[in-house]
Length: 81
Picture 1 (cartoon, rainbow, N blue to C red):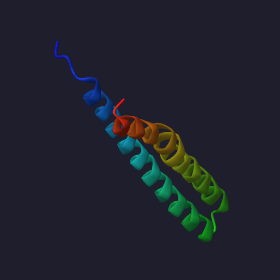
Picture 2: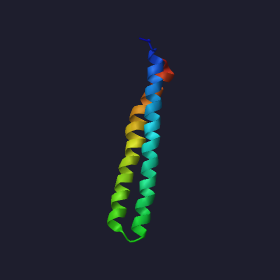
Picture 3: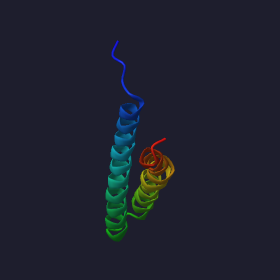
């Protein structure tokens, strides 16, 4: 079995978190856009649902993954711990 250094594992995890945060944020932006277009087009229920889901996806991408997961890992890596 190949012994992978801890720094390499940490970098791979950080990359996965950053990609996930980017994907969730992108989905959130697309849902927000769709929700506003649906509301303006007259479908208020669909617009509100899509806007709510977009806000949830943006929260997951920015706060849950970005601020609470990626930022502390990045600070730990830059500090050399």
